[in-house]
Length: 139
Image (tube, rainbow, N blue to C red; front, top):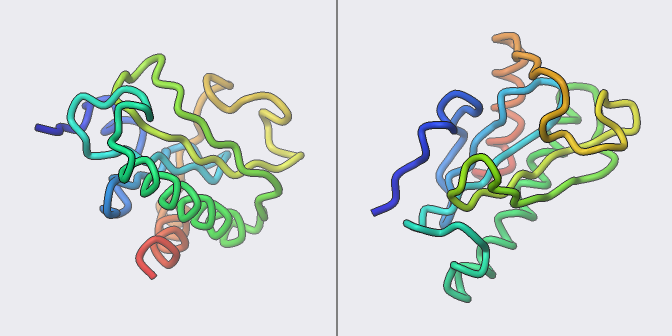
């Protein structure tokens, strides 16, 4: 049975439940950053998913990319480039990071993972980011 790794509760906030994945907002206001977590018990790698689920994951990654762009627009920082990665070095359960990047973001051009300390969202900015993401994810 699938259970969300407790690490996600401290680093991200729930957005919505997609067909395959739980979509979450990474709690770092420096980046328009979503995490997709397939609800498949024991999945550690994309290759662990059945073929139909792999295709569905790709569709949900594209959707999350659109949501990241919407978050960037809502924050007045349009996304210039999407970074997509399934690292799993710290949290083993398969999850995919979809991160909106800009040439002026603090980690550019390097990776966001492990860069500096996360910046907490203000309550208003969190509400704006959440609403922007949900407008895409639940359309």
